[in-house]
Image 1 (tube, rainbow over the protein chains, first blue to last red):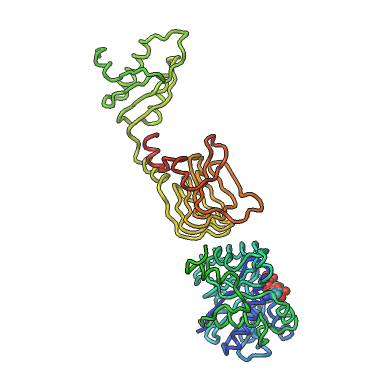
Image 2 (tube, each protein chain N blue to C red):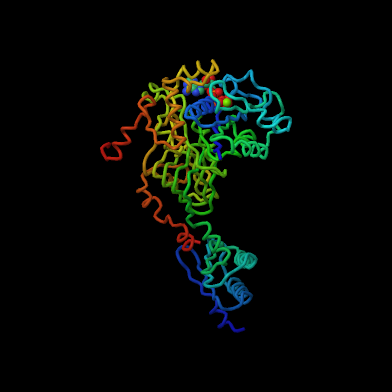
Length: 265
Length: 230
Ligand SMILES: Nc1ncnc2c1ncn2[C@@H]1O[C@H](COP(=O)(O)OP(=O)(O)OP(=O)(O)O)[C@@H](O)[C@H]1O
Ligand SMILES: [Mg+2]
């Protein structure tokens, strides 16, 4: 029986879709059976980043309105036999996507997959509710900016009211030089305010954008900074304890150790 | 009814601040009123005498709203007298419960996140943070054992004595009764073990070390304060 994980953020454009595509790819690399669900009706992107746009015949709304079966709407990935995408509708009316419908679809998928990753739309409206309702776990994505952290906090508060495990945090688009200069919130600060477990951090990396534009998530590449970060997060999802590497260097980490040992003032 | 008996029901004491009327609390209210009326009308106040303030000590007698206004009416008829206070040793159970509600410490163990509001009657003891965009409200004092980064509103029903204290104070805004203060723009970081309370004129919120509260608010315990001061 698979596990459904929703990737959410509150604020738009912080990297939910990018994270979903890359974690799906990284989990598939680890031989897990993965299904990605795009719930961003009308603004679907996940298919583009996965390079699967041309193959869409049916979408999630077709499934919910019973124009096809779930299995007919699923698109197999180009690179992996164990990775599938259930695309969002680009044109249809959102109103046919309901919480009950989402639960139904997820329950149909669960027996066949290890992980079901749900890409959530921005905001806290109905689209968010639909994306969250069928999930067992949640990942909250934020960037190291105040407004993004504020919205992540809002979302965490809402998630705490759901019947769902405490969410985990991914901090995306970290720029080391800005953090060092104090021009961006640092990792410790963000984790302290949000006070949920940190699952991983991802650097701001041009490779991410390049790869997405080629319809091949960066996690597929063997050794860019971002792909290692995503692969590490995937391993942590599997329960491995992977330390935060120097590539995804966590500023202030030594300070924390010093504090523990009473060395810092 | 003899004059002798009536005199025992009400004792009048003059002080520098005015008159205090000690009322017998075992006789009927009607008799008490009548005697009060008799005493006050029998006394002659000179035209040029200044106004005298009157304090009524009821002992263990409870007056309902209507009785209280009757009592005030009788005193007010005497042109020279002004009722300052009416004091009783007893209150209704419902009032007592209200006081208790209003002055109890409400313990919450959680993080108040952006967009969330935590509103309590009485004092709030929050074990946890108030994040930016989160809000805590109390009719009494607010104590945050954690980081106060959002908005705290103490004494929301108008209690100007209320205070706000936090282990780490870096709020968006503090409010006490109807007074508001916000953090200065470009504020970086906050202060540990800080509190905010209204100044002596009750005009603006001042910030100080938590330890200063022993001086600024010696009777922080609102329940005791209400019992003794009404
Ligand atoms: N680590 C990264 N480094 C560089 N660019 C990134 C990174 N993560 C995301 N981006 C870029 O940021 C933009 C927004 O990303 P994405 O579409 O994944 O966000 P989203 O949260 O899904 O947005 P929406 O709320 O609109 O659905 C994209 O152009 C993406 O390529
Ligand atoms: Mg998206």
